[in-house]
Picture (tube, rainbow, N blue to C red):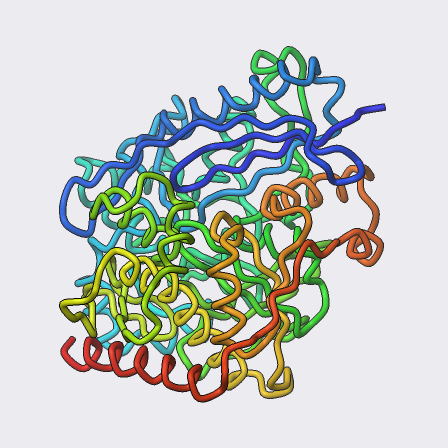
Length: 497
């Protein structure tokens, strides 16, 4: 009997592969850094072959670590950085342009024009999204227009579009399968989340030929098998979900009202709203949380572009720290009497503001401000932005009630200072799970559910374990003052945009 699920986690800054046992523990892990390229202000790209090669290297590495072969793997599950866009030649599998990363803002003017022409209502009604460079549609059109003859080739069916999951699936199966799952499809601005289908009106609006598009399947589904030459024998691919939705599954947020927030390069909070899509009145995204057995579960999502990236800025930009963990120590030493606020809009502001042109700023600096205060401001900025998202969720779905227990994961969730400050500013508990590899666990679970390796969701949810609950301790008046300072800083920037 196969002992493992092979989970592929292809992220923004690295690719990883992990072997997951039946009890949900990790048997082996391999990771490779993924270079990013910044060809112009606001532009972020990756080489498609770097994405593929790092994934393949990691998969082979974990098999070697565990002394395992293809027969020991029940199935593969894939999770990925969402919205990142690739267009490739169907005959060769080679991309015709660097991948345009989700953070990329080069199509901001196009999005502003479409919004100004009044198309926002259609896009929001069909997709649950706002017209923004974050999503894939305008990225696809940019590639087709930037690469000579690409649009004509796309219309002839010679090219394929995919988010990273779809590209990896195509390469893993030797070009035999061009498919994606409902969660990744829902991030393109081309997919009707109510009908569960690509939308011809949106394809025409954004200038994307239908011939480019992958088939859309459930998150737990038959996605083919790997080319035998890759791992010695075929391995079935049975699960797929965008990274934030995979984390929601890994956090066992299967019940309406449950909220998870992942802190990586960015921050992404998702609220399970069940079988009913909730249309946001506060500029959140309505998205597909997961789709199993043909049944869609929806979520409200708030996306923050800069979370862990703020700590990277302290390290790489300001050279204040050598390692990310040092930010905790510095922040704890900060003078609480200083109201230094960082609005980390390095690539614009995400939800609930959606201002791609805004740039970051520091407020409240004095002669006494030093590295400790800047470190605290960077960590607090993540908490303030999360508060904005949770407030918007409460306003959009009053039936949820005022109290929230937030399940957290991602690299920054290891920061005790940040998680405690988050609980303080939310005025609500923050739960950190014993297994923080929730994104990988979600991808593994979807694959394992499809092939019978893992139990149904209600039983799987019972295996979730708490490592630590952070409870709010900040006095109410202090909390109110800090939140007011944050909102004044944001208003200053948004008002100028």
